[in-house]
Amino acid sequence: MRRCLCAALLLCMCLMLSGCWDIKSLQDVNYYTGIGIDYANNKYQVYVQQLDFASVAKSEGGKSDKPSIVWVGHAEGDSLSEAIIEMYQTSQQTVFWGHLNSIVLSENLLKYGDLLGVFDSLIRYPEIRYTPWVYGTKKEIKELFTTKPFFNLSPINSILYSPETNYNQRPLIAPMRLSRFIRELREPGQTVLLPSLSVSEHTWDRDNKPDPKLEIDGIFAMHNLAYKHWISYKNTLGIRWLVDKALGSRIIIRQGNEVYAELKLEKPKSKIRVTDAGGEPVFNIEVRVAAAIIEMWKLKSKKEYEQLADQQIAEQIKATHQSGQNNGADLLDLEHVLYRKRFKQWNKLTSGGTIPLKPINLGEIKVSVRIDQSGMYKLKRKMAPY
Image 1 (cartoon, rainbow, N blue to C red):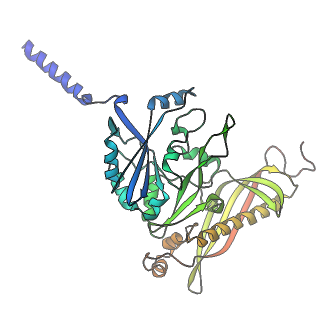
Image 2 (cartoon, one colour; image 1 turned 180 degrees about the vertical axis):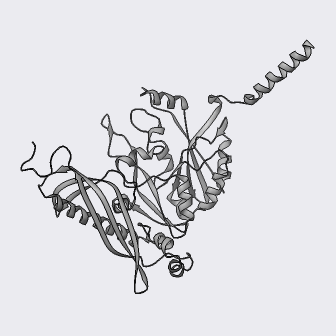
Image 3 (cartoon, helix red, strand yellow; image 1 turned 30 degrees about the horizontal axis):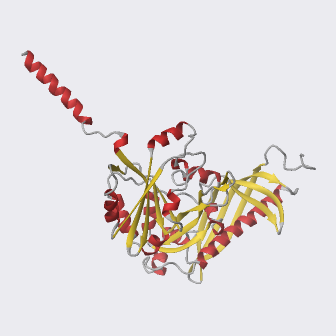
């Protein structure tokens, strides 16, 4: 009887241990955190970045005296899967994709590659989620993966993996997750504005030597799975006024060459109405936004500042639309508004979505800026506070 009880107890203990029987230690696994995909010579070029998680843990606890270690792997194949399998040949240890947090697509891939095929292959990996950040780039992917942040911190602390921090400070081009990229890529009539990741080599110095840093320098516009054009961030300034979540956008109020003030604008609210003119749709835009005065160089009335801000925002929206039209891209995503609000008309003008809407006529732009804060100083003052 005692032997039976001991055997039963031993069996129960074995069952409890079986849950972690084949568990692997941290040092026995290669964690791929970023993947870059290029298309050259009719082959898919795959770059992967893996980090030393020991250095990541140290950087989260404080600054390290030594630079973080980054490995970048490269392989090629006739398909994405073939290139990844080729990478496994030298991976040394088991590869885990569950920490993948960034996907970089080259301009060549956007132009000539099979995007749907690439993501069909990538997402079939059960460890990969729909949450990684997605970027396009005109740079060499290897250069992006080897550019490190400040203070010897891990690349986890860079724009590549944490773009929201940068966007919250300068909300020009919104970061994009894989789920949103796939959704917009397949949505009829929608223009995808994929953030363009680049390297700035002249902004920062370290010990009087150039210290390159990552930056978002523009967008890649795509429509109906087709690449349209790369556009600099300087020509996309009007997009932010149609994004309700844009916080802390700033504009400098000027008239001619004379600078008057700088305003910080919060949570713009926009409406787009569609009317007809000669059988073609016309898009009328209304924007309302609250503002605060950050700096003031010329004494003007509150109403004058608001009117100048109204005019400047309207000009930015118009200039962004025109820049997109010059490059065959609908940067304000007006065709998608027509698809949502007047499907029959959109279906007729685009032959069921097989051709882009042309022309895209921009009508009246109404902007209403309301200044409700002026900082610690009153707006109406007779002299400068210094």
